[in-house]
Image 1 (cartoon, rainbow, N blue to C red):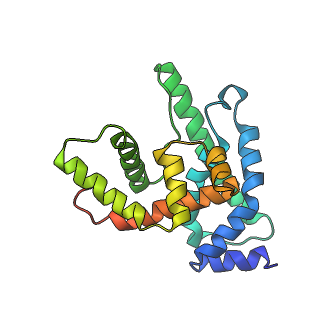
Image 2 (cartoon, rainbow, N blue to C red):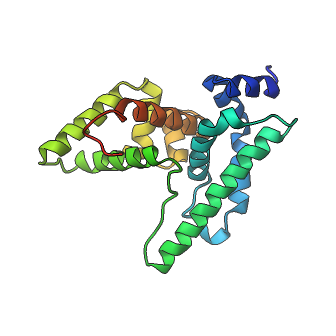
Length: 204
């Protein structure tokens, strides 16, 4: 088995497979930690896997800045990021309750936020097709980008963001771990961002 330090060195150098491997090894423990820190009154509305998926966006973006400081340092770094995302989700949920609404964990990346918005549009469009030419063109471009994903990424994206299934249900459907589904979604979002970033049909 490859040592974690070696995987981290590869990840910092840009090896995404190495980063995915080490993150998957910590996913269950991280999920338990987030769940433990989630107020009991909010455990029905804030899912640990949703919080972690947002944290993973930051990890993928910031990994090159990570400095190995011995065993446990990577876990501590990711756990700190996840804790911050959890606190953001708690604040948003409580603010939404005061305002009579319900909050979602907000994406940590502006481009990802835009993509998730378009995926929500796609979900609605599949039920009630838009009559707008611009809307149809944007949906067509999004579908084309989704079709270019590898099959596992494509299925994970559709289950999570188009069908709106929880990570646990998507994982069961795909016969994969919840951590693996989060990783697939993260890689898919990155690929969609790259594919759609230059399109004039989308406003980021």
